Length: 249
Image (cartoon, rainbow, N blue to C red):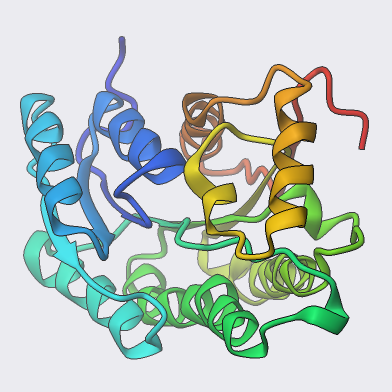
């Protein structure tokens, strides 16, 4: 396989499992050096060993990305370690689903902080270096929930609609600096994301729905991300919407 990202540096947040883990591996396989950020140190260390085997010179950054300060720190430490950051993949997120009337507002506040504010903060930290080099790519992981707001997903959809709006405004601000912005919008993916749902009946219902179809795999989404960041410099894939073949909505 041609090393299309040879010489490039990437940072993947939420890299300890699922889409983030698969993306870090896919970027490394394409030749990038890869920094990985998440809370769970043991999982990051295990992933780093696999990345090192691919020559990715991994940097492990343990961080609680609910904090915007931490989100900006991992960007700055990546730049300090490698001397640059070319590809930022804002993947860290949770999915808390429950009816508005029964919602745990503290839980929703944490989700808004992680899914949206952390993404914004990390992006802000990455922009000066990218603008200075007139080169960079920000990849924001959204969802079909960023296009369709379903019952019991009001706050989750609000975060993902927010990711889409932020990304489009950002794209228009930075395109003249040769910085690209891509939003990836997967449908149902077989990851641990649904394990976060604290509302029992909602969790049971969405798991039953997911089990009724051939779900996307984390590697499918990772391949889409690599596709976006390996386009020629004059091509920006702004949005990539992907669903399981069996998913109707």
